[in-house]
Amino acid sequence: MSIIKTIGLTKKFGDFVANDHIDLSVDDQEIRCIVGENGAGKSTLMNMLYGLLRPTSGQILINDQPVTFASPVDAIAHGLGMVHQHFKLVPSLTVYENVLLGAELKKAGTPFIDSATEIEEVSKLIEKYKFDLSPTDKVEDLSVGAQQRVEILKMLYRNVDILILDEPTAVLTPQEVDDLIVTLRELRDQGKTIIMITHKLREVMELSDSVTVIRRGKVTGNVLTKDTSESELAQMMVGRAVRTVTNAPDAPDPTDQVGLEAKGLCTINEYGNEVLHDVSFAVRRGEVLGVAGVEGNGQSELVKILTGLMTTTKGSVSLLGKDVTGWWPDQLRHAGMAIIPEDRYEDGLCATMSVAENSVAGYLDRNGVTKRGIVDVRAMRARRDELVASYGIAVGDINGEVGQLSGGNAQKVIVARELESGGSVLIACQPTRGVDLGAAEFIHQKILDFRNAGNSVLLVSSELSEVMSLSDRVIVMYKGAVVGEVDPKVTSNTKMGLLMAGITDGE
Image (cartoon, rainbow, N blue to C red; front, side):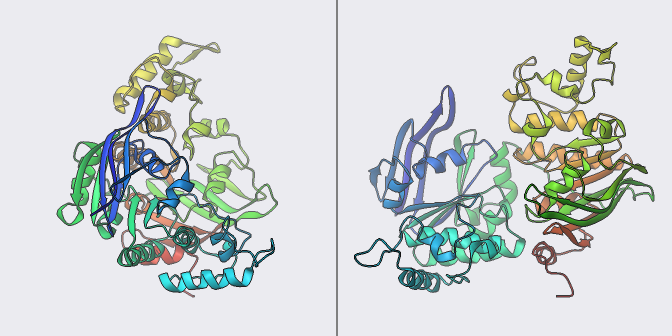
């Protein structure tokens, strides 16, 4: 029996159709995964189901009854709750205070909160669902996985029968992912229906009962998990077969020459707290050094220091044997560094400038683009055409703004510009974030081609599979420090998960 159903659900933003007549039917006590590339329309669909967006047309039915949600309050009242990718918790409050936030229990006849009863109610809930939590612990002291369980408890306290999770494993270690899968299965067995948005196909195959694939706002497939495979799902998502790019075992060995080296790097954030502690590493020529870790453990600060966007309080950086500590990005590029930044529109592109202008940004003094300090428009456009052709960048309007491109094609503009700059050291931070599987496959191969040409690559990514498949060596960061170095070819996910949680061999 279907507990939730959509009929012809459509959402338009102006002329853009984000969801095009979506028909979805999820059975009671089913775990359904919704998969699709970035921009396929998954989140738009879930936001309509949760009352965050109003459909342009179509119907939502709960237990075969049409419903209209003006807000998440309406959705919760109909038994539907959502756990967002970015948690909505108050770190300074306890577990029970977060669970009851907005629904506090008052002492009879007074405006005061009855803390004892609240703790008792949340304790019963924790025991019922077998969550490893203490109601009086502060959220700021919990692991990310435990914080996620608090988010789930918030919804369960409100008696939801349908639970939507948006990319729930994005910030979890491998062990926490395994724990979440167990938790969700137990919730299903206790009568709950789970809908999960994800792009991680391994987790889809391990967790779900069925899968709905969305491509370009339309449903392209509904399959039982037992009747499909990762490769088949990937093909439905992209529209063609997708090859997994890995670091070939016969790749050239690195040389002894060091391309990039950091020694004892430390820095503080805007609150005066040290967020990078004595970080040291060296990347050889012909090598990809991966940096793994749960997001928020100092990786962003490390990249900012290396690329001239943040200053050190201690330590040094050398590029091709030259001390470049504190150099600006422009100076670093001239010295041989290529940079794929974490945020493409914050630090890598100007959305309102043309594709041509973005294809030479930071490199105006190269490839004959400027003559006597004046930009040669013809040369700039020729450079653009060269990069567009060689990197397969799909451009609707060749003279249009780069902001009009899809996320994957905008990222390809950065990758093309940086890899073809003539640099010999690449810092690639989240190089495939927000791009589709096809573009990710292409970018991965280009990074390995750059390495195979005898260059150095520092790869920073929150996608553990990306780091492990492309890197020659991997360092793991936890709370701003390097806690271990591993060989990705022989290291298990269990070992990586322990290191990402700060647990070393000696503990």
